[in-house]
Image (cartoon, rainbow, N blue to C red):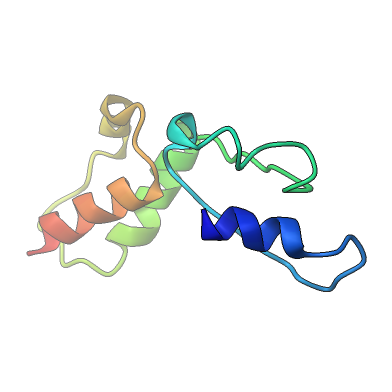
Length: 94
């Protein structure tokens, strides 16, 4: 409730910038998204197969490996985001 009051209190010419992020846009309160409260809504989709493979390569670069990594197995990670892929590498490196 306080956030909504604060958002409504800013004037249009103000220099206030607010950035919000969520991984659950489906549960956002509709009053937060009412016209006039937020100027822009930017959605970043989940990475595609090629992007997931690149993300995995970046996070796996610093891990000691025994043998080769089958990056093609990333096809099984449909719906994973970058944080999920980083977690896979972290767990595998332990």
